[in-house]
Image (cartoon, rainbow, N blue to C red; front, side):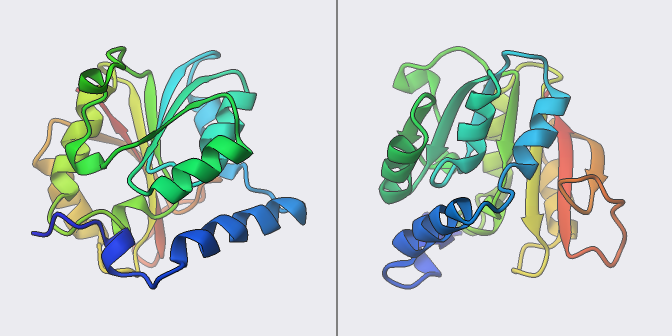
Length: 199
């Protein structure tokens, strides 16, 4: 197990700025960047308190905020958080590692109605921390609140390992899809969107 997130250990210098500019360019070109937020918005009640875990430069949390939700976004990368603050004012953006996440200890004690973990976050956290990250998400979301996690299955973290990590927690799988627009998940799917329920 490593305590260094793969976002830092497995990427080249300048990766964070490249990532920020990539999504800024896509937004300028009018690409649809709100798919994840549309799904979350459809699942939760209006005005929900939502944790954007591994929020990156804020595109999902920013859209959820524009749709009327109370959003707190956390990411381990200060560059991404700075971009979120600049590009998506409104939500609370915090630098935090999901492996050691303790928002009550940081002055944010209120539980969340839901959490979203988009953008391949599970592939970028530190190796061996996956089940701990899931337990931390569970601790921050109210009982029976949804935790929606999407990631590609071709980056070393398989669906089987994910399911084993889920089984080591009190979380339960509610539904699973192959895409954020709810296409059916099959054995050949290269991506998984899993809706968990907090205990």
